[in-house]
Every structure is written in C-alpha cells, then in structure tokens.
Length: 226
Image (cartoon, rainbow, N blue to C red; front, side, top):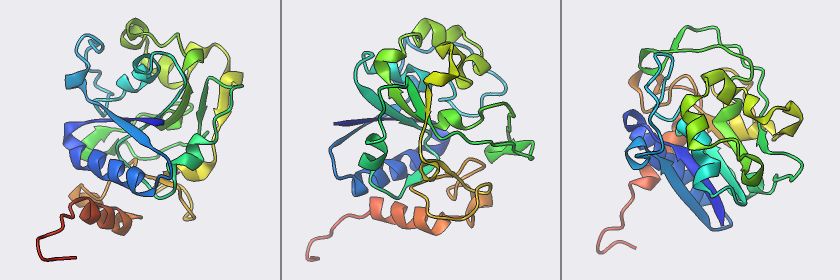
C-alpha cells in the first residue's frame, strides 16, 4: 500500500480532491490518501498560526512520520498539485540510506506575495518540503511536541536531521514548479504561486490539464448512458 498524506486547506478544498483523483486515476498500485486537515488533528497541532504561514498545513506536514507510527515509508505533498504519472514510480525511489527524499530545488522567488495575497517567504531549501518521501523510522525526531515548538526554518530546512547527508534527492519531474521551471515533461505539477482554481491564475501553465482532471472528478454516469 502506498501511503500518501496531502496538506489540506479549506480555501483550496477543490485542489485536494482533484489531486487525489489524479493520483488514483494513474496508480498501478493500491494507494491510501490521508488529508492533513487541522480539524482532524485535535491534540496534535496546537501552535499558533504564524503571520508568514500561507497554508493550514505549513507545519502539520511534519506529522506524517508520527501519523505513520514511524513505520515504513510515506509520501507527503502539498494540495496545490496535479499528478500526471504513476505514483508507484515515485514510491519506487525509496532508498534506505536516507531519512527523507525530496526534489532539491534552487528556488529564489522574486515576487513578494502569492495566492490570496499570502506572503512569499524566501529561504534556503525552499519547496524541498512540498514533496517528501519519508523513511519514517529515521524521522522519530518529528514528535508532535517538536513539530509544535520548532521554528519554521528548523522544520523546512531539515535541521531536525542534524545531517544533510540524510536528505536524498528525487527526480526533478516529481515537483515541477509552475511559473519557474522550464517547460518539460512533468510527473507532478506544482501550482506554487496559485492554481487555476483561483481566478487570477486560471490560465496558468497546466491549467487545461487541471480543468480536465476536475471534470473527470465530477463525472457521474447517468441512467441510460453507457
């Protein structure tokens, strides 16, 4: 079973469901998808919202190993994404030498704000934590207490590992940053500035693919149709 945890924010609820559909529609193996909704994390997330926190799952993503009982492997991904490849291909990248595997972007955004006028934070290793393949047994430092008290940079820059050698690299197509990366074949599209579900980004790169996926998600066969 491929375990996938997806960040959930009510302001982008449609994005979560379209992403989930895009995973299931292409997977060659059984997939379990868990939304990281704060309403379902009572007693696990109690830190106050930071003014630089652009989504509800900015920090809850790091509960993935805990929610997996620190066993096996799990995938985390932001909700503002679209999977265009078999998720099993990402799952097969698991490498026991590492505690976590990510796409190692060198991302330096120039804009000050992004979707819904949220602040665009700039820091080393930005977007590395937007897709993570967790080797859960090697991530026991990520307790609920630590996730709720550590600084944003301690979490998103993987300082909890103590050694960057424990961070493995995943193929770049598994986190294609729309508006930044050169056009090419993407296995996973990341609408990091804003997705086509927001009016100001409705014509962004891969918007047609996202809209097609949304229509497929809404499909219901009517009586008399085959």
